[in-house]
Image (cartoon, one colour):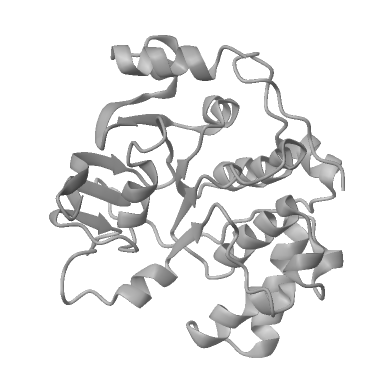
Length: 286
């Protein structure tokens, strides 16, 4: 499978998207997102309010506050060790936090009455290293949680899985195992697996950082289509071409704090903080 070449950061070249990307990679046209009931007017899909977190005596997040509206795409960037991945993992309580509150579609993450497994079934998560089950076929990777968590029949789960594999251009690989696929293909399977649960939110934790450069484009193309289908997304990434093309807002973090939270044009055009200016000058210089 041919990867869509990505422009060099800061080159101004557009990310391949839409029908061009779909035709290049054999993806089937059609929405990747199953519409979900509308969120109440004025209520954010994700609300992060005063989150602080410690590992022992070391504070990794300090009073982080932001919101993500339904259908919004927010990119979280910053230097290594700034707390980006930790923050996004707090959204579905994969990382516990000591202070503050996070609400997802009206459900308080830290409330003792909250059914966390049920909440996580509605919040798709795509990890840096795919996290597929190596002993299961690709279609079984997509079907397992549907059957165990959502109670779908094997037939319905299989159909949903195959439909999504077609959407991400991997129909021919349904009966293979993860080890038989490239990194880019495995990450597209991971995205399809998350979508199989009909999530209301998708979280991406550096989804392309473990990939060879020529495989990055094929994953970003799927994410671009997902964003254009209206999925609410928080994406931790250093792919600034993707951020410029798709993000509604960019959050810049440093030393566990949200330093900037701005519309993408403002962030890339005139970042307010000296730290963000320095970061962009380094990451966009090549």
